[in-house]
Length: 436
Ligand code: GCU
Image (cartoon, rainbow, N blue to C red; front, side, top):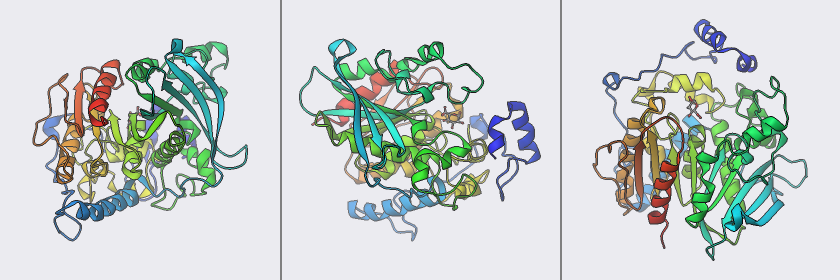
């Protein structure tokens, strides 16, 4: 499997066709993706409010038991078990601080979260901005980033971690200043730090590679070295995958935010885009300290229903990213009808906490309609818990967000991305959902 990462795309396709890359016991090549709504198969969504014995959940106490059942199902069959909690000896080292960042609007703090007592324990570098214009503990957003903390902002003082510069291509490209400068701020559009600060929220982020490098060998590196859960192919069938490692890291970021007096740790929304949206979904599902979830274009393994078989499928995701989910999830490759649950039930694990799902009209790979339908199908759990759900509202048209104080959704024009438009919606939703 290891060599597969370095194959050229054409070699990948040949290899998949010949079955070289097929994990033991699953079909060689998954069916191609369907992007045609007319070809969505007939499917049945399991009811989040009917337990495995066929009993209907009647009240909040009954939901606690059903929730535990669903959490176990999604853990065992999809995301895998996390072998770690909060590591013994974990501590926080502030490596830089500027009370006058962003032209005086924010306090910037860079913090190394050391996952153990030893200085060489695995670690995650957190970049935190706290708004200066508002007093008291502030609500916050926390999410992982793709390219390194310095990419999330134009702020020239954020440390550039050497290993964050084009990790996958570093061997092929010369390292150095030019590339670093190119990376700096390259994702700032996606993070909108000043916008978030100006609305009175704190924001925190870490680079996901710090937790688990996004490749097959990543499952034996960084955080994984604390747990010895096994390699991508050598793991127990229900051991964690990379998405669960990233989710674990989001909980550790929250551990830090709980120590920060300028953050209201009971009002921290976890958010993420795409594969990091999948991680945010699982973080919010597993860690009830998060006040809510924003899942942006999170698609298959995130907010989108698998049983629709539209866009990316279970078979395609497991073949391309064999390290993301538990090995047990592979038994559903091209067999989505056999899944004993679907993503609406994973989203329901967030209830009664605020939940926002965002799609992009051209991002069919992530199945916008499947993302909306999953959110809507989690609604009855919100309603049972006394929260305003979206009811039977149909999927809203492009550019027309819908939200209550507990659930929200929009599909914007354009492609797979996070934009200022998305952030304005998230902030409006957060204002309503986290108001005190
Ligand atoms: C791929 C993958 C998606 C994922 C996306 C991303 O397209 O198939 O599941 O969400 O990458 O993370 O950008």
